[in-house]
Image (cartoon, rainbow, N blue to C red):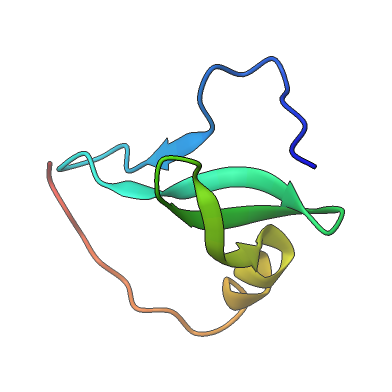
Length: 68
């Protein structure tokens, strides 16, 4: 069952450079997640819990200096 909240859109887009869709924020299996959806009904086809994304930030990451 899909529960709606007060947000009009939970799509997450890049905020610097070209506007690119990064996915949709949602709660999946009681975890906040970044989801990828398909179709008119926006069926979730893949997701990554935000906790896993945050764990990746503890790794050695590439560094970029950009001027958009």
